[in-house]
Amino acid sequence: MKILYVTTGLGRGGAEKVVCDLADKMIDLGHEVKIAYLTGEIFARPTKPEIEILALNLNSTLDFAAASKKYRKLIKAFRPDVVHAHMVHANLFIRLNRMVCRVPKIVCTAHSSNEGGAIRMLAYKMTNFLSDTNTHVSQEAKDIFVAKRAFTENNLITLYNGIDIQRYKKSTDRTKADEDVLNIIAVGRFYDPKDYPNLIHAYALLIKNTYQKTKLTIVGEGELRPQIEQLIQELNLNDSIELLGHRTDIPQLLSQSDVFVLSSKFEGLPTVVIEAMACECYVVATDCGGTAEILGDTGKLVSIQDSQALANALKEVISLNIEDRVDNNKKARVRAEQLFSLESSVEKWLEIYEK
Image (cartoon, rainbow, N blue to C red; front, top):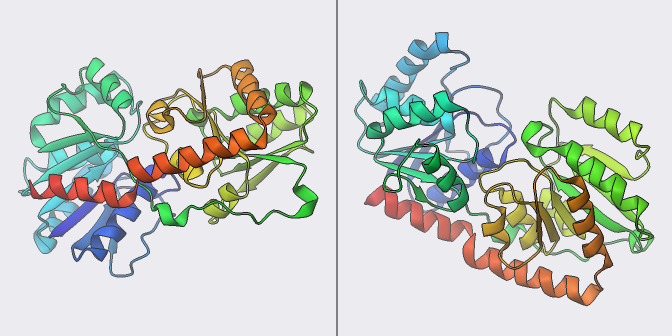
């Protein structure tokens, strides 16, 4: 089978990583794969060198005609059996191009519970007839899109993202110097949906109300980093919060941490939570879209944009005895294996592609 993945970009987000992992796995199964992206720099790449990556250069609405011409040329040369788009701009782009470019099958996947305002939701609704299958990454996010009338119950299905479980395992590689320090970690881009100010304020509240030695590490880059650095300085947290920037060793960092925290305002299905569970890291997360479905009866879930609630949850976790934390984390690992493996995800995608 020939599969063309089209994504809005190939940045450092979870959706981009999902696309690359999916492409790699399809190559392993003997399929032919290409990836086209609309705009931006390439940060996420598949590991398989035979996967060609093509830029369509849709940097503004003025570029639509030129980008569409490149896309149609790619379709004509590659002749894919399936075009699978990811994220709102890519979804709308391939739908609109189907009116002048014949493609056997189009699949569109949304990755966030908030992909824009009323105009984008209307655009989804008006172009639904141009795609064969529409999916969302969590049931909660699907319900939100249906409530906004961008889709109906009948033309949007839930299909969870999967991760390569074998890449994420618990590590016992902790130095004696840090054995008495409880390591809290957050991973994600510095932009508004991640709501890092919520986390910083919660951590400030936490260290005022606990004698446990803790350290907060934040992994990521983004346009709001200067504001986060300023907030850390204003709250006198420089000695207890470390910003690591962009890293490629996320599995190792998660596996060496005790608690993973997600402070987002909204998400689709944050795969980093699944990764943390696979690494047997205790998860404290906001109820921001998909997290409740991931966690099940493991970890702790709190309201969005409530620093006090987040601080209270973190305090409860670090107050647990080690045995209770270990039991929770092992249960979380099993849940990640059973529900969110890449292999299971790929099987379901192939069913959709071949239907």
